[in-house]
Image (cartoon, rainbow, N blue to C red; front, side):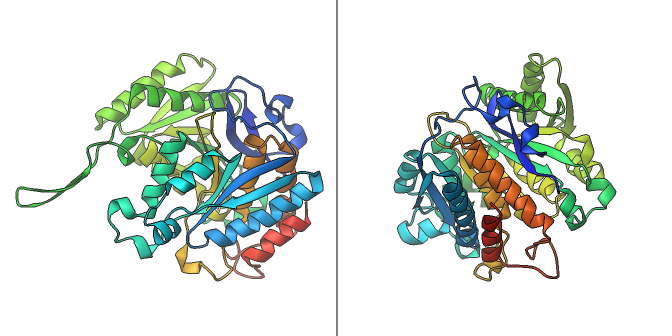
Length: 401
């Protein structure tokens, strides 16, 4: 059979590396909890869970529906229950409450065992004031829930090598984890705004990091590398940015605690080129919020489609993580049943493993996705002929549990 998906968790982080191997190949420590971790989840295995779903905008409701069908099939098979509670975020929340992330949504998320987010945004809200845009709600959610680490894998499946726009010899065997700091940098720096200056409009943002923010995300990256290829590449722009010089200095300092890990550095512009030229040189990449936002999307296309890649946003151990596909809301295909739900289903697998203490359920979901791909099932983003729709793909995965 084709390779089985698996998620490697490290002893120092409970949501971490995504790579592909038979679940039986996982070390015992990666399939259980109870370790001292730098990012931990608090929920223990139980018979019933409460999960907040955030369908958001565009294709969001369709891909969430596909994930729920697959998750319910796993729960039924393995004898536990999931109570799904929907909440509004992004444009949908703006339309209903004139707030992209209402307090009622945050309260519900904090009271849940975990959260499954689809996608937000669309042209309908692009001309809104900054505080009334969907993306502002996403930033607020991350800050309020303390989700400082975003883990975005780019691992090329044998079944999908030909789906990449790059040559097979370039992408075959690629297995990268982008570790992106999520609650600092230019997205959160103050002051910011648009003002009148010298008779014209003047826009400004601040790229800011505290030493402690850099150190904690560096620790996540090094801990992760210890369970992978023991290589970390730190991405910055230290040749021109003071904040990047601080980033580099702190990462180098933290690396002293990990003598087994090889640390290298690349400027962000070079890293963007190297991801296309020779992606297999990378194991773990760690970078700030804005650089990580861009590079992780670029890395995801090595796989052939954003529709295949899950992610985890984790941090504060007292609350839930948020698990979401790497792609956006794709408003151009919303309502057409052309979306790919697999990244959302695989995000749910990460949720089962790391938030809900159900590694067997995660194994079952991942194996079902692989079986569907082995059987030749493809959505429109992965092939041009003999494709199936979003709804059917969710059902086909559920059948293979």
